Amino acid sequence: MTADRHAALNADGLVVPGVGAFAACMKGLKSVHGHRTVGTRLAGGRPVLGICVGMQILFERGIEHGEETEGCNEWPGTVERLEADVVPHMGWNTVRAPEGTTLFDGMDEDTRFYFVHSYGVRKWELESGGTIAAPLVTWANHGCDFVAAVENGALSATQFHPEKSGDAGAHLLKNWLKSL
Amino acid sequence: MAVAVRVIPCLDVDAGRVVKGVNFADLVDAGDPVELAAAYDAEGADELTFLDVTASSSDRETTFDVVRRTAEQVFIPLTVGGGVRTVDDIDRLLRAGADKVSINTAGILRPELLREASQRFGAQCVVLSVDARRTGDGFEVTTHGGKRGTGIDAIEWAARGQELGVGEILLNSMDADGTKAGFDIELIERVRAVVDIPLIASGGAGDVSHFAPAVRAGADAVLAASVFHFGQLRIGEVKDAMRAGGIEVR
Image (cartoon, rainbow over the protein chains, first blue to last red):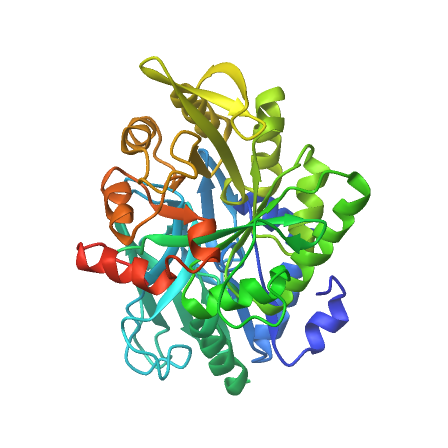
C-alpha cells in the first residue's frame, strides 16, 4: 500500500482499490495525483487493476445523491444507482464473462464473486470498431445488468472484490498476475 | 441467477479467544478464532461475524490483533461487532481488516453515530444490529443481550437505521435465540416490509429446515452461532436444504 508516486509508477502491477463514495475516493486519489499516475502507467502499457470504487472512478463520471463527479475518464459512461429491490447489492453473485477473457480464464459460469456496492455502470458506452481491439466487458445482474469487469489492454477492473472472494478471487488475481 | 443467500457463522470472542464452547472438526486449537474462521471458510461460509464480548478495555487490544490475523489468512468478508462506541473504533477495526462493523447499543444512545459512520466509511460497511424482543403485539429494541428494554419500537428503529445510512440490518430475535425452534418469521417479515437494504436473520436456528422460511420471509442472509460451533448443523447441509427449497446459495 503506497501513496508514493514513484513506487506506484514503477511497480509491475498497480492495484487501485476503493471503498465508500465515488466523490470521496476521487478526491483522495487526486490529492496524491493518483489519476495522473494511472494515466502515465497506461500510456506506457503498464498494468493497472481497479477494484470496486477503484473500477468506478475509471469511468467518465459518477452520480451519487444527485451529485455528479468527474472520474478518470479512461472509459465513457456513468456510474449510477442500481435499480433493485434490495440495495446495496451485497453477497456472492455469478458473472457473464466474454470469449477470450484472461481474468476469468479457467472458471466455469457458476463461479461466484463477492460484491458490495449500491452503484454501477449500467450502460457500456464505448463505441468500438476500427483497428483498436474492443475491451472485453463482463456483466452481472442485480435487478438490472451492470458491468462486473472490464479487460482493456493494460487496464483491468472488477466491480466485485476478488480479495474477498475466496478461491475464486485468488484464481482471478493469479490470472491477472500471470498476465503482467 | 441472482445473488446467493449468505450463510454466516458468528463467533463470540473474549480477549482473543472463542467462547461459548466449540466442538468442531479437527481443530488444533478450538479456541483460536483465526483457525476456526479458516475452518468455516473451508466449509463454505459466505461471511464471518466476530462478536467481541471482551469486558475489560485493556483486553480489547487483542481483538484488533485477532481481526488482523484473520484478515491476513481468510479471504471472505468479516464483520466485527461488540463494544463499538465511536467513529474511531470503527476506523481502527476497518484498518485492522474488518470489512463491516456492526453497531448496537452505541447507535441507540446516539443515532447520529450511524450517520457519521456511513458518511465517512460508506453505507456498505455499517451494519445496524437490532436485538428485538416481543412485547404485546409488537417488538421492542433491547440491549445487554435482551435483558434491558429501551422502549424503542424495533421495526421503526430498523427503518430509522436505513434513513441514517446503514447498509445492512442484523436482526436478532431475543425470543427465538437459543430455542433452536426456528427463526421469528413475523419479525423478519415486519422489518423486511419497511427496509430495502440487506437483512440478516439471527436467532432460533436449530434444524436445516429452519433456514428457507427465514429467506422466504425476506432475509438476504442467515446467521447462527452455537449450532455451527457444536457441529449440530454444518454449513454444507444448511445450503443443501436451502438449495432443495429452490433458494440460490453459493
